[in-house]
Length: 125
Image 1 (cartoon, rainbow, N blue to C red):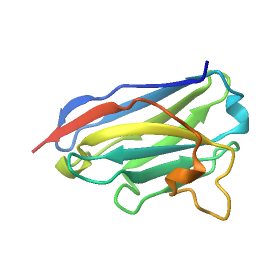
Image 2 (cartoon, rainbow, N blue to C red; image 1 turned 90 degrees about the vertical axis):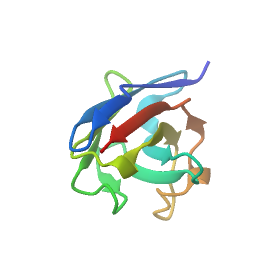
Image 3 (cartoon, one colour; image 1 turned 30 degrees about the vertical axis):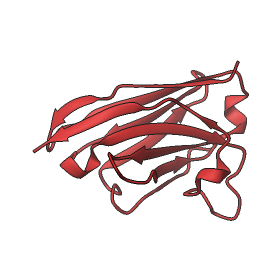
């Protein structure tokens, strides 16, 4: 059974930090590229970060310099270290796995096959 389970969300004050985790099972994790997405209340889901199998990363401009994505293939786990959090970072955060993305479309939801249920992050001012 394929599963991606996010954890580590919570409530923090502006300027604080959180570390999200995404534990994967049921598929060959090290064959997949991983992404983080988020969806704020009443907003469309947006791409946040991408990390491929060698560990190369790419970030949305809104989080660049504040968020760090990484993966541990031995533990089948994806991480998102979030520092200097802002109220606008408040959202449900999702991890996603895809065999691509192809053509540099790491921001595209349709490039990802497996999705987690999400973990809520709330940042207060």
